[in-house]
Image (tube, rainbow, N blue to C red; front, top):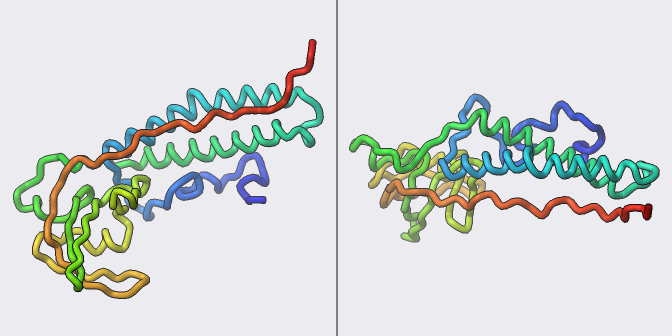
Length: 208
């Protein structure tokens, strides 16, 4: 059994990374786009206002149905409640440390072609293969859209470079030289938060 479920309140289970994504580097802000920030806010609001009250009610009702140690619905409900509380702590921490950066914010001409958080970058490697990536927040990783997080090795290699520069990527697969072909800033599309199906307990209410 996971250590996270061995006791009701685990003082360590709300650390960054436990309730969701990768940890934010120590001392750093949680850089995030407006869309990503809204998604985290929507999820937190849903957990607090909808799912946690529903699960709490279900657990309370299941607790009245026989021996709790043998009541699968009660045990599952309590486990789900711990998961929700862990996620709430995680989201609260993420949002408290959030630094919202809008890629569409006007930039000085001197900085317009330099790579910072929110940039969409077109680069090529030594073979001439071109790739496009967008640098986003830790909780916004989306490989299908070529979104990479700002803490990734590739993003760290690209940051602060500008069009026409060459950078060196140091990755687990080896060293690679990359040429920056284009830097642009545009709206970053983030999928909205979609609630999961609510908890469903299978206990049959006794006949009156």
